[in-house]
Every structure is written in structure tokens, then in C-alpha cells.
View 1 (cartoon, rainbow, N blue to C red):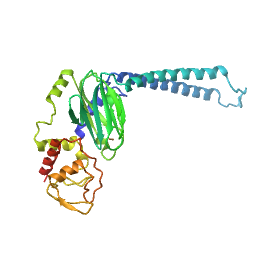
View 2 (view 1 turned 180 degrees about the vertical axis):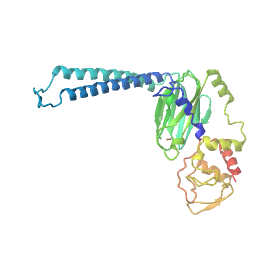
View 3 (view 1 turned 90 degrees about the horizontal axis):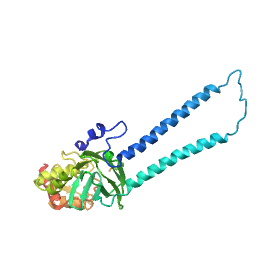
View 4 (view 1 turned 135 degrees about the vertical axis):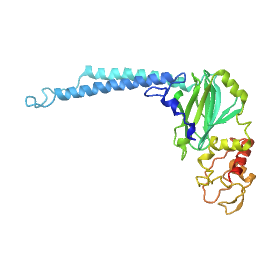
Length: 323
Ligand code: CUA
């Protein structure tokens, strides 16, 4: 799964603080950030310099053992140090509020894509073309993209550093983000809300294509369509996140290993037992809570709706091959 990490895009093309700015509003975010940061540096410098100056100038000496005058307040000074920060904070507030609205209200002509998070994989559904992808989001350049997102299990957070968008995904609720990419390329997507054991591997790639490349991508349709079933199953094993819980080398993980699984005798927490045939494997994906294998906890989310029938067949064919 580590191969999905495209860190070169984050490290190589950006500046010291940020990865390369690739969405329409990313530069605004960076400018406001820099403004606040340098303003903080400026006041840090002024305050430290004044402190040191006063420490030295008004230190206790044999000639000056106590203050010459007792001063309680100074109106001019107090108004100055209230009005200047008020003015600066108002600038930051209105500047930030304008960008906040801009980042939260998607343009009316946005292309909508649905995002579903589950432990530990990202699924994308493109309503206008009917395509689905996992661990890979493909969008056209120079087109506002609105993501309508939800989670099927716990809190996750969707983060594309290059686009400067980040939003939590919440079970039983939709949240949205939008961005418009200004440059084709591949960019890293992270989960940034701790969501369990494989949170740090919950990655995806954003592929931004030129308009003509995107049309071709849509025309090519499902890239998995032409794969033989067992090879498709092998691909889905990582794309759909099965790898997080099920080993293929016999190691016991959160879930049972797939090695030697097919046609083996399974004993369940209910005390019953039977052979792992095609129907059992299918049921384990669609209704994972029906039968829990002895020695494991029922923590698998359902893949009903997120795996097509062909994909379920493919995973079964792949499991058959792991002897
Ligand atoms: Cu999903 Cu962290």
C-alpha cells in the first residue's frame, strides 16, 4: 500500500511551508497564512526587543533603588495598543471570512463526485458517468469539483494538501468540499483523522487530467472491466483495503488469513461450523456480522453496495488461488 504515497509531489515542488499550490484558492490560503505568520514574527520581535530594552534601562542600580514616579496608567498608550491590534484582527477576520466562504460554497456548475470512507479505504462514485473507483480519484483540470462525502463506520478526514482542502467524514451525515485544480498531475490524498490500526495507510491518489484526457478516461470506462477475475481480485485486495485485515501468507491479523481459506472448515463463535464455499465467502463480504469465525471479533464493515457482483466473484476467485 505504501506505493500509493506520492510524497515527491509534496516535498519537491512546494516552498518551505507548503506543498505546491494546485487549486484556484490555494494561493489565497498561503498568502493569508504568510500574512498572519509574519505579523506574529513582527510583534514577537517588537515585544522581545522592548522587554530587553526596559530590563536594561530600568534595572536596579545603587543610584536608582526604587521607581522615581508611581505611574498607574497612560491613556494614549492604552488606546494605541488596543486600536492597532483591533484593526489588524479585523483585517485577518474579514480576509479569512471571505476565503472561508469561497472555500465552502461550491460554484453552481461544479461536477459532483461522491466519496465514501471506510476502514481503511476511499471509494469514489461519479454520478454523471456511473463510474466507480477505489483509492484513486480522477478529475478534469480547470473544472470545479464538489465532493459529497460520508463514512460508513468511524470518523475519517479527507485531505489533499496540494488543493488545501480538508474535511471530516461523519457516519450518517454528508459533508462537502470543493476545489478546482489548475494543473494536471498526480497528488496525494490522506486520511487525517485517526481511524484505527491502518489509519496511516488510508491513502489515495488524486489524478488531475486535461479535459481531453479526462474524456478519454471516461470513455475507457471501468479499467477493471478487462481484467481476468483472479487478477481483478488481487487488485481489489489492496484497492478495497482487504489487505489491512486479511493476510495472504497465513499470518493472523485483525481478520482470518485468506491462505488456505477456500474449502477449509470454519468454526464460528456460535459454535456451528461448515465449509468455506463460494456462498460463505460472498456472505462474509456482504453480511460480515452473520457468522464470526472463532477467535476473531466482528469488526468488518459490510461491502454490500461497494463491491459489484463481478468484484465479489473476483475476490472469491482470488481467494481460491491462495492455497
Ligand atoms: Cu480513515 Cu484515518
